[in-house]
Image 1 (spheres, one colour):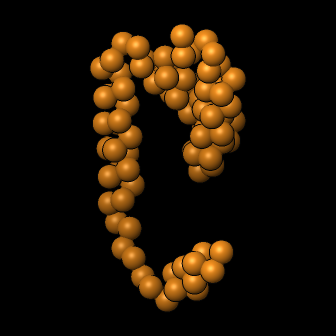
Image 2 (cartoon, helix red, strand yellow; image 1 turned 45 degrees about the vertical axis):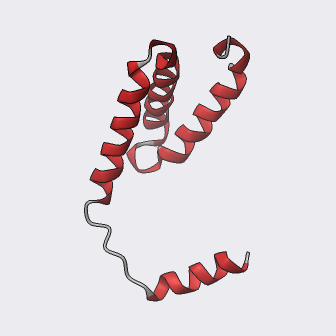
Length: 86
């Protein structure tokens, strides 16, 4: 808890150039997805991720889709874990 407060206070005074970070993160997610897609047994998980992201995009819009998409992916994976892990 103290480290979080310290990080919040110091973050106000420290500047960090985030130029290009959006491209790097997008590239990382594309690489992770393609690696997952290579293995046939992992494809349902990739499709679930894409579908949840598409639903979140449609419902919450481009500026607010990440957290709802992650929550939806978690819910779908937890809800279907018996079926997906067989």
